[in-house]
Image 1 (tube, rainbow, N blue to C red):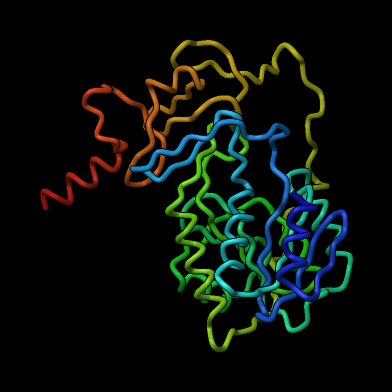
Image 2: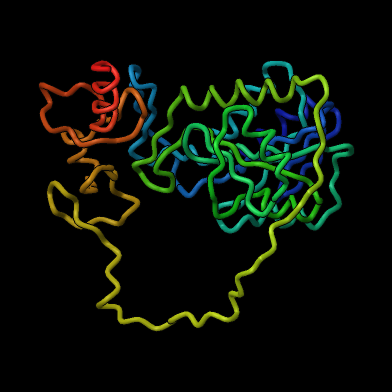
Length: 305
């Protein structure tokens, strides 16, 4: 993918930097879109299933929408004719190695106002990591996003190094890093549409980078490094057949009593809600309304009122 996208971007941008660890294409809009080229899966996708009514995509080999969805979003935005700057990194799933390498270089994009990473689960999340500028956060949330907490992504390294504000936005995937991962197409295109609006603003604002102070001293914590292999069973039983699987092999079911099913059992036991896109347990195939219990309750309550 690194080579293919490098060739593609060369045909769309005049100023492009290609290194083993990253690709930077410098555009004419003072915003940079960021995504990573790697996924947690080593094998290619051989089968893909699309539930048209729900707008949900799934693959038994692992979809890898983290962060193929982000790459797709960037390509769609470029195809629309917009030319923001683009940053594509390698080895984000191994600790952000590509972004770390790039962060050691001066920012190659002049007049850069802020960064948008397209690498967050869900529908309308926005994650700022250690960037703490209330004006910037309010500005992003005004586009319909809701602040959430995240661990890290590429911009976690780029923001402090370049003193640039940044945000990670939802691109529609759920249950990432597992074969249960799904991609909600409607959520993905919602973010694409919003980002296009941000890029088309006549006067794109700039924001001062303000960083969260790290009040937690990791060196002061003593972590237990020793464990007994017999007490460290990382497998989980399927709620259907009771066979044991690794967590990433199971499809989780949300509810008052969380369950998880292997792909074989999921055929008859799991569906995805046509309203919110989350997975739920099928109680009766004949009476299945294609809605999770929570949405049934909300919609029924709204109808009665």
